Image (cartoon, rainbow, N blue to C red; front, side, top):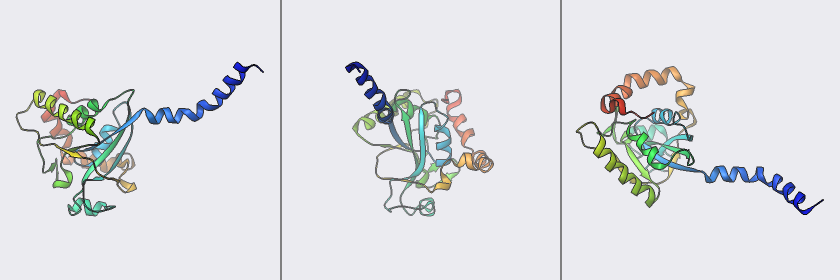
Amino acid sequence: MSGYSQYFIVLSLLLPLLSPLRASAATETAILAGGCFWCLEADYEKLDGVVDVVSGYTGGHVDNPTYEQVSSGTSGHIEAVTVTYDTNKLDYSRILDYFWHHIDPTRDDGQFCDRGSQYRPAIFYQNQKQYQQALASVERINKSKPFKAVLKVELIKASHFYPAESYHQDYYKKNPYRYRFYRYTCGRDARVKALWGERIRQ
């Protein structure tokens, strides 16, 4: 067997092992809060290039918080999602642009029908690059927003993210009727449309 033949045989055996590494290297994450994490998870899973979305809690002072603790406002956490995306299809700026157009950025006391600091909107930056991109995103939206109200989305340095209980993950798929009823009665889509109109990003 020639040296070239041996080389290609070894390479063909290694390629399946290297593929997961290439896939992993091509993804990054964003941590965002925009009210009910069921809704934000559902919105991001519609965006082409998003690999995974996990609902959870971050920014508080209690280890391993429960939904009851977070929703009561006693743990200091905010409902949020971690969005994992393919960097060959999306970048952080696009993730943020999509975020703005799917929330009400004029409120810092909650979102839609959910009131309380645990539902306030925030961008959790994980490094200096994300911080600078978030600042640039705020500036772009300030210049282009079709409403006069000031932006009240916080930029917060990311801390530990705790995935929510399993029944919260993919809630919109597991409980489609309850989810749609909640989303409609909460007025989320109506408020987003009233704010952004035709600028809503798909």
